[in-house]
Image (cartoon, rainbow, N blue to C red):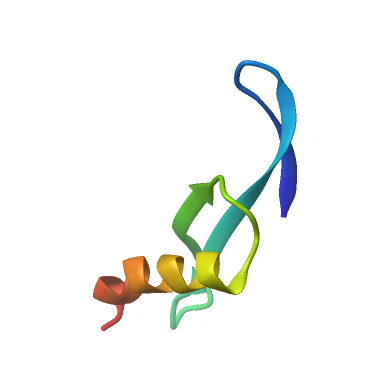
Length: 55
């Protein structure tokens, strides 16, 4: 997902949003990452970061 973000100026930046679903069907945000470019390497780093959350 790309959003227009304002830092020093307005620019499109990639936003990674990772959502999980509980056994009861509730959605929870597991991670929210901004920056870089959308790529398989970006997702690999995010999944590595989320690995300790897996039960």
